[in-house]
Length: 304
View 1 (cartoon, rainbow, N blue to C red):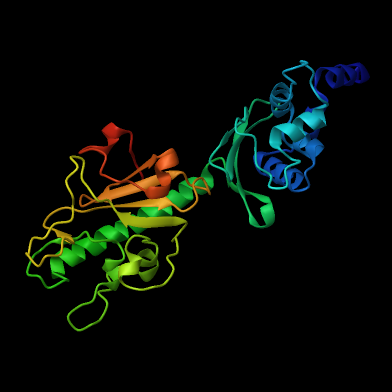
View 2: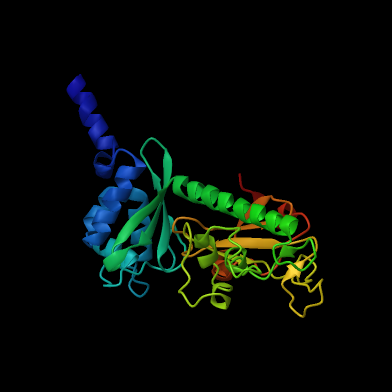
């Protein structure tokens, strides 16, 4: 009786189910290993039947209607024969996040789903950068903390009249100035840690000639205009320099590499709330204006 049951189970379960890794992390590692070796069979073993069916549909010859072998279909689908390992632009069981990042959804025989985010690494190899969104959440939380440090620096600037212009205003010239701006004695104001200042590509050049570097995987910059299109930068003391604002400011942080692992752009203003939104292709420049008096109405969500 037991032997008969075993036979039925073996016949009713696809062969790939026995080969599937036990969890998402194990599958991701197997998947990366297979990609690195350009091993089509390894990809099938790591991802199972869903990716195989998609690959076969993708690889059908439109002229003849014929489908190549399973391994050839996988190779064509994932461009494994391409030395640059560029993925096909339309991935059925995954989502392309630009040229170097890809989200893969894995489904196990028990119906459990997991998401693996893969990005290009050194030597044209691929690596796992996130599993089930945990790394993205962690990075977003770290950068939200950094944004709140910028908020504290702005409040200190306002309270101390750091630029000595006799105005209780905010610095809105750039993020870098919250560290590099020179006081009357020639010392840097230092209200923010230097790594944040160095991550301001738009402002760093005004103070030093060093090459900017992202911090926690993000670039930081000021948001130029408010929701009505009015510039934050004003000249309340009449010195001819539009670098401060008597009551408002806004900054943003955006990923240096979209999807590795974070896709969110974060924004913050004088109210101290951090909001995040996936800007897709617009991520490379950050937020050009404050989205709305209530960012939630423009699809932005609070980041804790």
